[in-house]
Length: 113
Image (cartoon, rainbow, N blue to C red):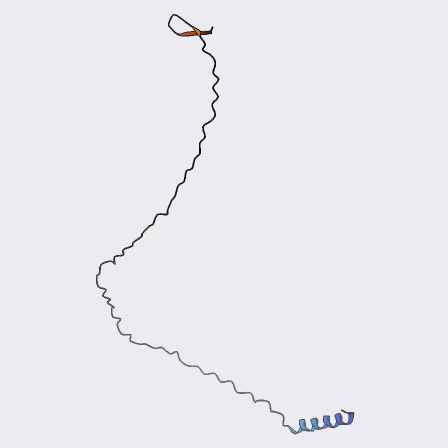
């Protein structure tokens, strides 16, 4: 926009603003105080009745529980392979020994011959 166009636009806006009436400030309302006597209300409530609940007598329920326990299959394998320990016997010829005893018959000494 050129400067002359801006001036024309500004002048048109000013003229429009002057043609619109400005709102008048609201008049102050008078302050009014009203006092009233206290209000009391009395009501008559009907008498409360009693409530009766009748529950019939009945036996306790019977609950049967069946618990079938299946034992787990057990297989015991005890494969023990015991080999006899080697026994070395040294064979010597026949030997003789003399046994000496005391007065009570107890062995006191063995002497090889």
